[in-house]
Image (cartoon, rainbow, N blue to C red):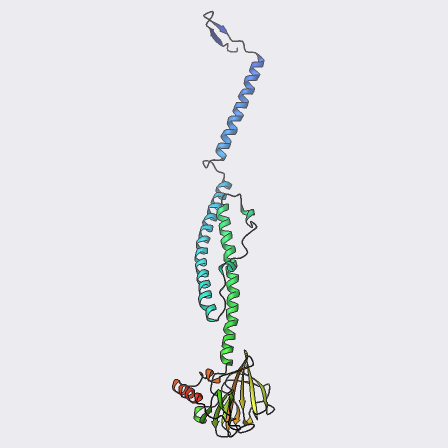
Length: 325
């Protein structure tokens, strides 16, 4: 038997029974179901968005994300160390290596060029850790660019160093006749009295007086350009192309010990003192050309003379005496 429900009627001051229809029962049931559904949905959403209840998969994923964040933090710390090292190398490259080899420093803009304009990190936006990921990606890209530029710079420095070593070996830098074999340094570079006309004319080289047959040495590495007597006044003479615009000339030889096209080293015997061509006695006439212009050979004797010997040579070369050719 169903329970009868009553309500108090204040007008009649009596209790009246509540008549429940089927329609009201259905309405109440539907309302209950809807309320329960909404309550359950809200509760589910709250639970899904809280850390109170996590599935095993969610727990694993969360730990993985935390591990990735930790690894990114460690990576950024290592990047800071590498950036400091690269920055130090760049500074030495610009202020030491490139200065020594007379190369222009690389501007900072060139080392970091290529990272403006289009947003190349757009695909990394919209995630919880986007800022950290984008920052790390940027630093890696910049570091990669710096490393590539620095690698090319070091390749250039290596080439410059090699060329510098070749240049040092090539420049004519020793006296072509040893001091112990010299009779005297007969005449220097500049205006001297001509032995035939007795008038002053410009003497384009230096005359080293020595006995006939005294060895003559190549003053730098190079290739024999000429070894003949087909140049007016020089008699038997040798010309050596040292590269870098330098050519040395050795005149009035008695004989050669090299031939045209032969490679020679500094200090190698190339011929012997003579008295051929326009000459008044056995001696070596020595000249140096730079870019087809004659220059004073006196400026290049730093390879085999002491300071005392060099000072004596300078004093002798300054004397406005008579040349021997």
